[in-house]
Image (spheres, protein in one colour):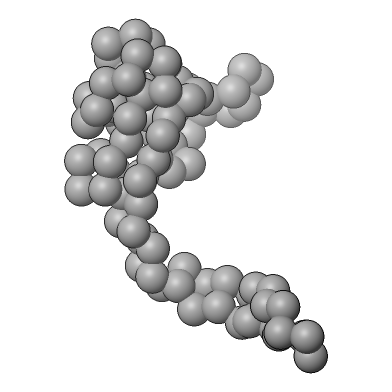
Amino acid sequence: MPVPLPDDDSRWRCPLCGNLTRFDVVRATRAREYVHVDLAGAAVVEEREVLDETVERVTCRWCGSVDSVVVEPRPHPAGAPEEP
Ligand SMILES: [Zn+2]
């Protein structure tokens, strides 16, 4: 896993160009799906539960660098109280 998924307290950043917002992500997902098939045979996924998810590669959309993206602390929005 080249870089962890960001959570509520972290974000991705490309250290080469400073990109914070655009990434191409290749991820392997194992999921349980409720598939509803109509009588004509068209299937629609109505519920989806992710059982396991692994990020395999993150590519910076701006400069194209592979596996250089890092996780850093996410800044608190202006006005939000700081966590102790
Ligand atoms: Zn970049």
